[in-house]
Length: 349
Image (cartoon, rainbow, N blue to C red):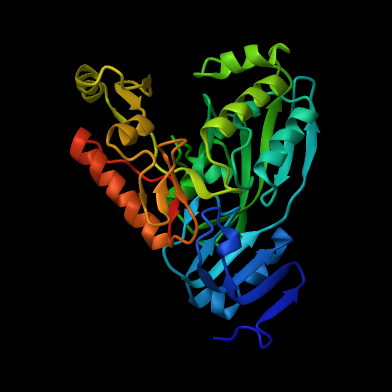
């Protein structure tokens, strides 16, 4: 295959590389390659990118910061990454502002941008790895907040209609770690996200550990101190992807019926749980994994973190296939002991 005679090319608005390494494009740092890698610097160039013969006739994978994907093999097609970045206020009001952010912007950098500009809401979502464009797909959340609470509009290229679309919050179909974009993988290439960010509001500090961290900081309760408290908790509890390959929490907290939750709590009084929706309860996947004996477990370089039972880690040269095999072993172990089948959070390729 040779889409470009030189093996790579720089076109107006995008860059193409053939037989591209993806090891530096995923936070697990597993070795994988793509037959074609296209970085889109200007969103309007997607119209041209999608008409390239090789792109049209082969599988396409949309890749953000690589913090929510596990490559178990090479990708036999085109990987597209939107690298357009930047944040700006496009509608400034007295109590809130509409902020437009390029899909390629680093999520944590944007959270700090919002704090520096005096906005509320995103402080609990600090230090989540990945890009702004990936945030709506997973409906990222932490410490009581979900990103859907602040998303006004998602702008994307719709591969099914070959046109740009603007989807309001309701049209995004957000759910727990879920969205329309996750349900129809490959259909939308997110190019920008618009956030409605308030200038004041109620800070969520009731999640376990946040109040204690705020007390230790001793500087009052503000968006910045809440962000600092959450960052301290995350740093202490979760392994740093810059130091050891991982993609954060690998399994979702399972949501079960109240009846099943009650039976589990009767048999296991220490099981952490939270109300989810009417008739349903969310239980701690980390607790289930740890009680099944997998915290700190290791098979070669594929392991479960000693810091947090939900995090699978690459201790060195584990392959994606080895990490996926370990994930399935953990899932089967939890199902055997508790009768609950855990769902992975990352996209498994």
